Image 1 (cartoon, rainbow, N blue to C red):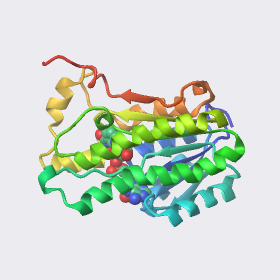
Image 2: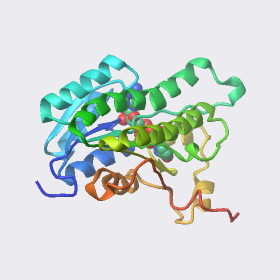
Image 3: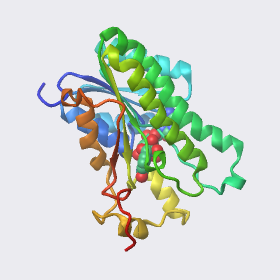
Image 4: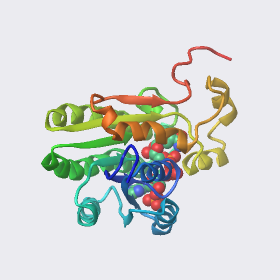
Length: 253
Ligand code: NDP
């Protein structure tokens, strides 16, 4: 198989829709064998048919250690190895912090931070034996800047950036590379829900973005291919901001 990821085995969490779906399809186009993980089987199966080749659908909850263990066991059983993990599964919750229920805080932290830890640990055990592997964590602008009413989300994504650096330092000498992508505002189901609730000012965000549009899931796929490829061998511990210039913009339009 040709392509920049020819014959690599990649596990993508949250692959049934949005950014995870775009990354999974792009990886398959680049020749990877892709394990599509998430909780909703029919969405994963739709992505598998679209990819049309060499995929494995595996329902998994990233918050559940046994489910994560089964995911990586199945990946190895199907394809023999794991070269790339994309920790993409994530949820958000927007609420004034003084009203944020503990249950919502824990759900966001469990999904966005503990989930990537569990998946990185399971993948890392396999990759350390192989002597190589790539882990790509999907962080956020909230890893680097504060947004109101997103205390749990921001804490989870700030933690994910710190986890990226810790793992990059610990596992870099043993052949692994661990990086993050911090996407800007991407129009997906996660944001559509906020638009419906009036909690997402899409026009103002577009106006502040120098590229003058919101991102699409496909905008994140290119950087995710690069970080998974052999060309990124000296990139480690990096959080790669992909946001049309939103964070760089110090001006008021
Ligand atoms: P979506 O809501 O469209 O997709 C989220 C995916 O995560 C779904 O496939 C969902 O599948 C999966 N998921 C959620 N919880 C779990 C779980 N416990 N176990 C396994 N899978 C789970 O979101 P996006 O595509 O927008 O977001 C993807 C990632 O990108 C997230 O980490 C998000 O924080 C991040 N991000 C998004 C931005 C945006 O503007 N959209 C900006 C910056 C970062 P299912 O429910 O079937 O399990």
